[in-house]
Length: 379
Image (cartoon, rainbow, N blue to C red):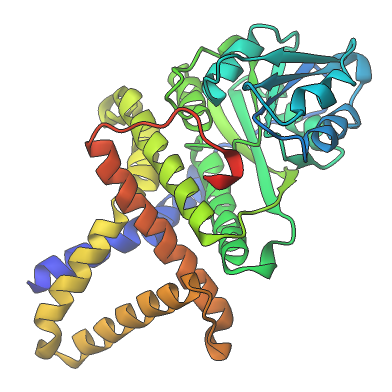
């Protein structure tokens, strides 16, 4: 039972701590840099939207006002059968630089992107969510990466506005800081797996249509990897969104994203072959597959610790640590914040929430469930 405990604990901490250490070491001795330089190819920004009337005008104007040559930048908004006036707002701005495409009936983000890319004029296609605001120079900095011929896809850094006012917001911010640091390491290692879907870009000639039930910001980067091109993270490219304030919405969103990522990993399963895909396969298994299995390693470590708790004082301390972590997480999820553990409680809450979501997603994936359309901020 001790063997099961220590093995489960190792598998649990591996994707969070061991894997980052391994790729940091590799990057330090044999890392690959991105050869960035100023470049101004033609760019089309695509904004998929479903009932984004509250945000769509600000998002659209934010893209039109980028510090980039106006004659080289246009925007396509693809409305997924919106019913709240989103289309009317976009129509007021339609012209030489703005197109509106309406997708009817609703078919989801992947189908919308497939439709929009077919109309894109730019050599580079930039993706933005309907509520995502870019810094003024984000597109200019993003396209600098494509001056490196090895780069086929770029993602930036997503920040959250007013994110520290809630347990979920604080957890999301901490999670994204960790993910962005990991993406920096993966970029030096060779290529990242996955992207920040609201602030990313692809060479148009590398785009391929994605099945409607697949997650675009995971499958598209993997497709680019399969062509021999790199997917890189640029910390200078900044974008902002408002986080989910409610635990329920964040939980449903995490279940949906994990379920679609699991389906995406299966769809691109040929890339998991370490004999053909070396470093990419290693990153996929370490960063994604092991992460989604973490809740089961947590359960195994906890149950085996219960059995051996009397064997040593060390096992008693480890059990107390687990109970404390999960207890703080549950309290944080219920909005109960202990003054002494305020920040730790919020982080524990998000850790428990995400791993519970991963467990649900794995079960749904094994049942063959899939998600194609959803309400953006309801999960």
